[in-house]
Length: 192
Length: 192
Image (cartoon, rainbow over all chains, first blue to last red; front, side):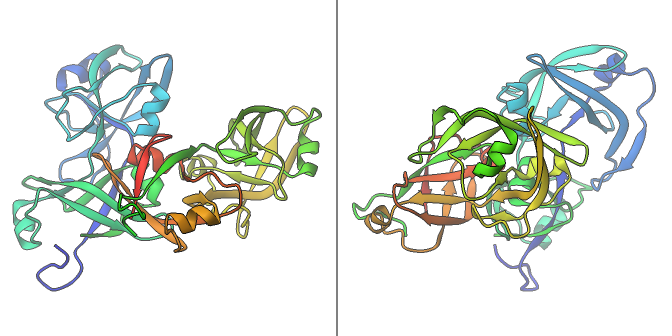
């Protein structure tokens, strides 16, 4: 797949995911008294960065001010980079969101309280897309490769297609991929 | 270049370079009173991690315990990752060692004193090799691509060949590349 139906190189814009947390209703209420409050919307419809943050703690190390992404979900999940994982001395698996088999345990703390959950993953590289866009752009395979230009460019493999209704067409990468390849939010990258 | 003269895939073992500093004799003497002391040898003949470390300071941010690599050199140079660069709020160029055009300014501190130098780069991806090995392995181009397996694998482009006498054949990558692609020291990667 090199060209879309207009014969152009197929591109996708990038969103960089910094470390963040998703919470269930139940876990949210263990950590916060006030209702969840939107700070700024994300490109994915209905999703937002919340005013609320947590501290992650493991093996005597802490990561503070870790942003909550709202609204609450059916699962509590912490997404970090491998750089973070080395700092916390854990080895989380690379996973699609919501697939928590083998996820690492972490303690999640706020002023109100703390919980410990097997919830830490490194997010896989993925492209959000609707069924309609997938057909329109001819992105019918399960995964693609992405070409990155520049002095520290290359190819990112195993970029999974994540089809869902009301998706905003966008490539999500973590901060390690972004920093290694010097990719920035809203960069337009080529799908191979 | 896909095969060496035996018809095997051409491989190279990896050394991960964490943030570090090289100093001239003059700058070393401004920062330390004692002679430089070897802590552990590196694979490159004659090079070593020193007991000595420095603190890097810029824009109110500090990186402590940054390792000195010995022996002293003809230039003072600080090699950091882009993750470090974001933390220090600077934008260093990607450069071959010793090529300091456009290098970012940094303050280098020890108990003895401090100096400020335009010395910060992000090291290019490179393979150390002798002229003899280069001919033996048929690595005659200036740069190659490296294939990385795994769930967060892909291809690293612009891997420069760095020919010098007494080199140990080895691919040097920074911690951002290592963390993004989950590469570890002594991994064997394929040269494309």
